[in-house]
Length: 451
Image 1 (tube, rainbow, N blue to C red):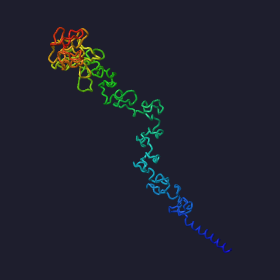
Image 2 (image 1 turned 120 degrees about the vertical axis):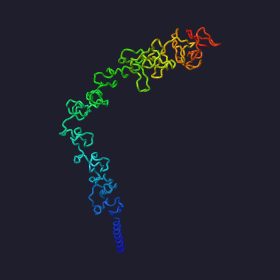
Image 3 (image 1 turned 45 degrees about the horizontal axis):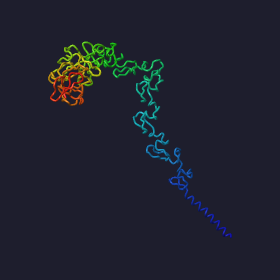
Image 4 (image 1 turned 60 degrees about the horizontal axis):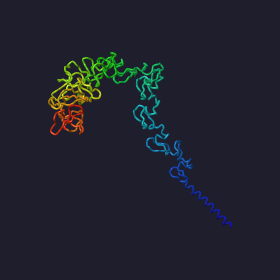
């Protein structure tokens, strides 16, 4: 029995001894990067290494106490604390991590901000502060010297109107912005920018500051700018020197023959009339001298200067090319009246104008007009009709036509017939038409058309 007890004791002792020796073999090695004891912690993170020489560092910024950020410009998290280079507090004083020179034009710390734009340079040896008396914007904030808030209370500045465009009396002297003498240099009138720079209600050349400026000719009035350019107290068209220009009372409403007298008149001997030119940007209503006028309306002419007010010397309206006449202008809707009982029936190619045709006594049937002209009925009043010679049209008989347009060939007129609007051959009551045709009267008139 005693022998058996001894054997049990020896077995228990051996187990405890050798079992403990096996555990020591798996103890944590503190600098191999391996969790030797399989407890979830490795190297210096394992409490078993707290006193190991490999883990004795003074760095307190990293979580594993393994190392410090040894290189602040290599893009690597050297100490494994999750912070790289300048983002690691270990690098706060490293030259790679702050703007070391605030006046070299270089982004020393690569944060996208150069020199005084970098917060690192604020109050750094006053490198980026505003110097209050050198006429330079030292800190590049858009305000120089006493207009910079840094200088508001500087001895060299005193109390002044700080902002000359804020509608506020900054210095409390009762004068606001450009009314304050502090703003004189900022609010001087610029004489050609159409802006009231000094806020005195006078713009450019109307401002006395600009009277002697080369941009403001004191001898000539510009007639459509709202400014008394020649400083005589009369503005634009109120100035007598503007009477010869179309900017004033001479316009397209006043070019017609019967628009005479009153405000529409130009200064004598000029009158407002029509003058065509090829430049569509220019006005065609101009003040024209009447000194050379020697013709009456509808008379033959040799040039525009011979024709009276409201007429043009032309061969293109109503007559053959050999007959240049003073043709009065009209407009069917707004100015339909014509001189000497003429009729506003023609058309002109420019500015929506029409032309007047004088009444005549031409023969509708025998066609006694000049060559290239034809006799047409120009108006009817229910019982009477009026004829005149007009440029011959080229639409043949019984073709479709537009009433009022003299497009039919000589001897025909555009009339409403039983076939509609047609160039109908004209006839007079009691006269014969071609064989097999009759003269059909038109209403109560003595003329008709053959059919």
